[in-house]
Image (cartoon, rainbow, N blue to C red):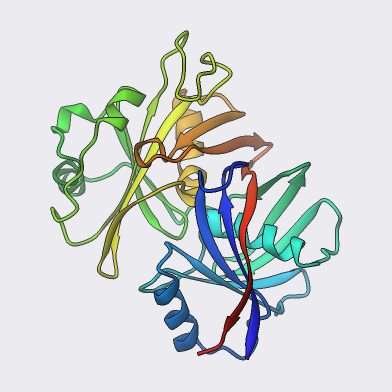
Length: 289
């Protein structure tokens, strides 16, 4: 059986400069093992499977898989899946908001012109990071403990440890040791200096406020993620409350990998909105296992 398939580049308007996600539409009838097999074969950071919702308040249901495991939530797959669902003719109950059902529950995605933004799910863990964990973080990042300005748990599904370095240049200079510890999800952020030209060539204040990198090791996979919606969502309250940024702001990610991801973050009342553009790079069908 063939099913509609799309590969969407997320957090970019320029194809092949963001973070790709594979989307299998009309995934009814696939079991968990078959979904995992497809995700392992696409070999992208995430592959999603669109299903009819089980909640009356949801427009569709999605299951999200890495090559090694299922995730309860992930940011760029949420935006990429919503983009593909809308392009395939999906019609939300409300014109300006789409409700996605996933492992963490309902996630609201808002439409603002060409940009989609999801409402960040609640943090499952926040607060200071213990010194034993920070020692592991330093081994992975190959930095001394005093190079870290601050750190906090930022767990909204993926259990990120968020690390603040003095500046964007320090973030871009990292050469991590992916073999240093067995498991980690580390997000690193540093502010771009004010009054200088940023990585897009635009003056500071026009370009990104911060540079972000994300390193993970799970299910036998160790890598850097090009652009990470869940991490930016989880770090935003901490960065805003600490005064590192003022909402709305733009985070750059993927620069070290030759990408140009741009994550747009805002806070409206008590909600964190994480958004970006998306562009479809591949459409077609995929055969069921």
